[in-house]
Image: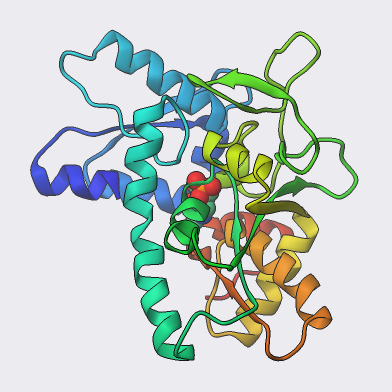
Length: 279
Ligand SMILES: Cc1ncc(COP(=O)(O)O)c(C=O)c1O
């Protein structure tokens, strides 16, 4: 999106991306390059999202006379969270209209399920429903089933720390050093979580859980087979939770999952894990 906007307005665009994510999100990288963006590989730390955000902030503070920083999730210092959450709220502005058209009102039992990395799509999906009775369920990345590593600070009881200019629940060691994460999904592979979601958890307005890599992959397969859509690995985590919950519900209860990305960007990982990728 950012590279498209930059192209439209004739602005230079630099995208900071972890070297590991450049490899595993190749289609996205190619699309951004086509729009004229320069991709800056970040080779520090785990070479994923957390390091890319750090490096982008370092670049920006050294070049703030000539550059703006744009953050693609509800993370970072306060104003960046607000800008991002305001923009993504358009999802629920449209969704609430569609829900009222479909059901004539907001259904009595409505669950809105969204994956949560930094938390921007969930914040946008839920925003207009905040003062309604709709239940919010955020699904973090539980990582590989047999690994201690994950990217689920809210589900796993991480403590408050500071990351990227904001206090938040964050995966950390005893000394407060940011901990390692692992997830099949590049977009959820982040040790922190927006302060917005920390508040929603503490105030019990939303509940958070996680899905493992394996559960997300299975959900991707099932949804692609049955629903005529092909979700990326991030929303596949949310679909995994919907698949767990649905058999326990009455038919009058409604679940809506935000299918916030397309699998095409994950085609290399999916092919590697499942041996085939069909779109
Ligand atoms: C398709 C998709 N969905 C979800 C996410 C997770 O980010 P957030 O939690 O900010 O919505 C990402 C992040 O890159 C993504 O690419």
